Amino acid sequence: MASAVTILAVDDDPLSRELLTDALRPLGVRVLTAAHPDAAMQLVESERPAIVILDLMLPDRSGLELTSEILQLAPTTDVLLLTGHYTPESAIEAIRLGACDYLTKPIQIAALRARIGRLLEDLHKRLEAARLETALVRAHRFEGMVGHSAQMLELFALIRRVGPHFRVALIRGATGTGKELAAAALHRQSPVAAGPLVVCNCSAVTESLFESEMFGHLKGAFTGATHDKKGMFEAADGGTLFLDELGDLPFAMQSKLLRAIQQQEVRPVGANASRKISCRVIAATNRDLEAMMGAGEFREDLYYRLSMVELHLPPLARRMEDFPYLVRAFLERYATEYGKTLEGITPRAQAVLARHSWPGNIRELENVLASACMMAETGMVDVRDLPAFFQRNTTLAEPTPSPPSYDEMLPLAEVERRHTRWVLHQLQGNKSKAAEVLGVTRSTLYRILGESP
Ligand SMILES: Nc1ncnc2c1ncn2[C@@H]1O[C@H](COP(=O)(O)OP(=O)(O)OP(=O)(O)O)[C@@H](O)[C@H]1O
Ligand SMILES: [Mg+2]
Picture 1 (tube, rainbow, N blue to C red):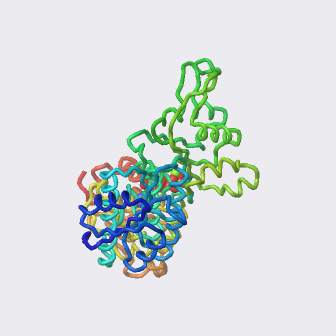
Picture 2: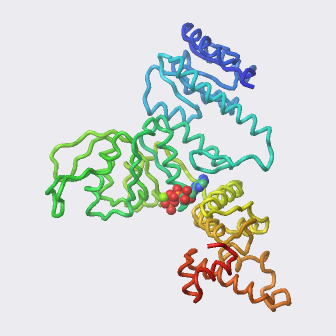
C-alpha cells in the first residue's frame, strides 16, 4: 500500500525541505529529509526510500553525482531532481544517469503531487506485478506497444522519461521492430502531444524535391511551382516531425536539415527570408549509420545532434519473452477485425511459430497472424491455418510427408475444402477472385468453406 512508502527529500534549504514535507504528507507517505548528501546516503542505506527527491545544487557534490551514488547503492530507487535552472540538456543528462523525472523550482505543489502520485502508482503496479508472478499476467501495453521483456519495459520507461524533455531523438532497429510505433509513443509522451505528428518518409522523396518537401516553396520558385507550399517542418510546427528512413536522406540535404533543427527556422525555396518554427524531430533508421559515416555518406555532426537521445528496438528473436503476448494481442485484433470468435492458438501452432527466426520481426509476425485469423474457423488457430511456409517447415506438423498413409486418404469434400482455402490464401482472402479461379459461384465457395455469405 502507498502508506508504507518512504520518500526522502534532500535539500540544503530548510524552507524547501519544509515545503516538500508539507506537500507530500497528504499523499499518505512517510517523508524523511536530509540537508547534506552524506546524511542522504546514510538514510538511503538504512531506510531504503522508494523515492528520493533531490535538489540539483547541493553542498559538496551535485544532485547528478548523488543520483549516480544512490542508484549504485539502491538501483530500484526512483530519483526525482529539482532545479531552479532548467535546460533540456541537463534534464536529458539526469535521465541518462537514471533519474526518473525532473521538476523546476519554485516548487509547484500540485505538479509535484501529481508526479509523485504517478510514481506511487507505478510503484504499486510494480509490487503487484512482482506478486502476481504467473504466466497469465495480462499483456503489458504502452501507447499501443505490446511488451513484456526486460528490454521492452526498459524502453517504455525511457520513452516515458525523455518524452517531456527531448527536442531531437533517434530511433534505431531492424525492419519491422516497431520504430514508427515508438516514435508515435514518444510524441504522445511529449508536451506537444496535442500538436501534429508529421511523417516524412525520406526514402519516398526524390532528391530534387527534398528541399521543397521539407522547407516548402514559394509560387514560381521553380517550374511547376504553381502556388506557395508549406514544407513538412512548418506543418509540424508546434508538434513533431518524424523523419522515417533517415539513412536515405540525400547527403546534400543533411547539412540543411541540421541547420533547420539547430536554428529552428526554415527558408522555403524561392524565399529570401527564414521563418521561425518550433518542432521536435524524431528520426528513425534501420541503416548502419556508423558505417555510413565511415564511408562519408552520413554527416557526423547531424548524427551527433540526433543521437543525443537514442532508442534501440531489439529484434524480435532477441526478446522472445514478448512472443506469446504479441501473438495474443494480434489474434485478438484480427479476430475482431474479421468478425470471428477465436479462443486462441493451439500449443502446436504456437511452437511452430516460435521456432521461426522472424527476420521481418513484428511486422512479419503480425502479417502471419492476420492471415491465420482469416483462414481459421471458429475455435483455435492451428498449424493448418498458418501460411504454407510454416507447414512445409514443420516436422511437428507433418512428420512424414511421404509415403502416403491411409490417414492421408482424405474424403473429397475435405480435399475440396483444403484446396479452396489454399487458393483463398494465395489471393489474400479475396473471395470473388477465389470463386473465379475455382470456377464456382460465390455461394458455392461459402458452402465449401462452411460459412454463411
Ligand atoms: N511492440 C509492438 N506491439 C504491437 N505491435 C507492434 C509492436 N511493434 C511493432 N508493431 C506492429 O508491427 C508493425 C511494424 O511496426 P513499425 O512500422 O513501427 O516498424 P518499423 O520499425 O518502423 O519498420 P520499418 O523499418 O520496416 O519501417 C506495425 O503494424 C506495428 O503496429
Ligand atoms: Mg518504419
